[in-house]
Image (cartoon, rainbow, N blue to C red):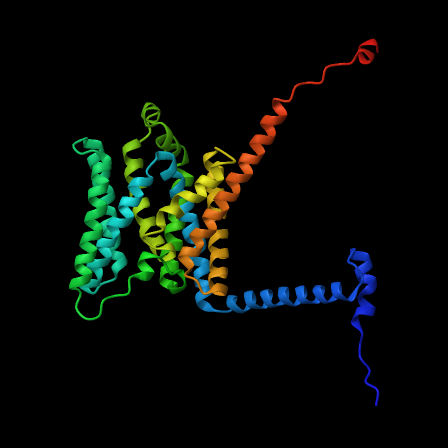
Length: 332
């Protein structure tokens, strides 16, 4: 009995001709393989979007990207990257204290972060201690206090990997509400006091001459930096948080110097890196926090390379000598 087989290659040949694909069977098999791979990737993406923990991670990544995009632009403009690093590591002492007392470690970490940030701000204003020395002391003191309290915690030692390197997949609905509310409050503050924040970030003396409350703005921004740091620990962890506050701004700053554009560009780049890092970490079974930072650094390197190529091309075209007219051209 003859078996009737459907030769799809014959029926797809007109489609191949219209799209410019060669009509041999090897090309058709490669085309089918690529279609299957794309379908598998799409099915995998739709599958992970059904999970509640992945949806929570996307919402948490969006709100964290908004907070870090706004605060990170201020941090980079004021050159407060080292201070944010000191506050980040000082909050580890609050985590250890929270585990020891049996309370929510993020509440005690927030207290440590706020106190250390205001302490550095006060010491830098009073000029009694050099700012870099104060940051180094608070940095090491916070890590030491955290290590001591974790050792003294009764029972099993807590798992610190999610706090040190981040695991956004463990974020809960309550965390999303807190992060979303903070991102909304931060956005509202920047909308109302954008001019004061902008002048305070770039020229405090000029801001004072304009009658702006520079000291109050700086203390409020210090509070926002501390809260952003604590809320972002779930995303990338203590060890990698400085990159989330600086790398998107550095990348966008290669193409624009406008403060507002840097904020929006950093938010978009941060959220895109969160989504890409989450998806790739799920596929490759790699920690999400580390992969998000890898994606951010890769974007920065690609943007830097593109910027250098464009500058070289523009400089070469600018220095190219004009062609001298020939005698025939002069006679015309």
